[in-house]
Length: 166
Image 1 (cartoon, rainbow, N blue to C red):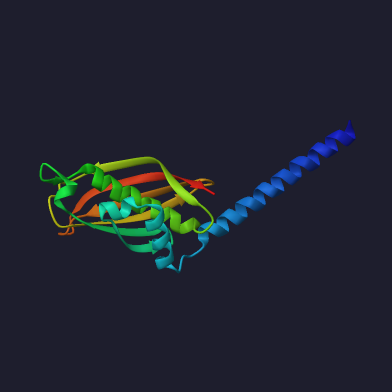
Image 2 (image 1 turned 90 degrees about the horizontal axis):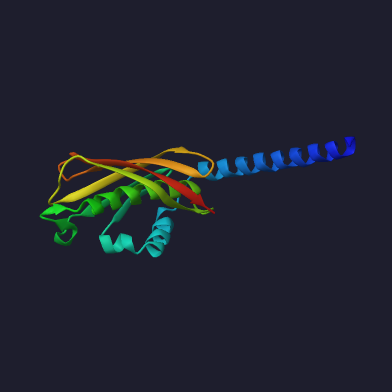
């Protein structure tokens, strides 16, 4: 009985040690700075052709931050205003890239929840989205984004939670 308890203790101890070691390795991945934005952009545009289809331009990426731009086109509007799905895509994409910049090349992220607040309609010009990863958990990343129009007016805010896929 004592030997079985001791074996059980060793199994639990080894499991906890391995779990802790994996957590430390994951933290190292999260703190990794991304220096090669062009490499990341190429990977993202190859994996996500939707960016090109929509006309999203990735301006900045790294250290848990991302910045996208899109020029309003007629085919992105509904009744003369930018379709809400375009703005939601801008928020979703910028949040995902912010999180991705923290784990590349050791995994990928996918959105599991997206919230968008539309503050002001837009009919023309340029939209600029900036996102920031505000917290990274064991497998979930929490990001926030803001979108401005060409006159530097805040037109939308949002956030997403993303799942790390290794």
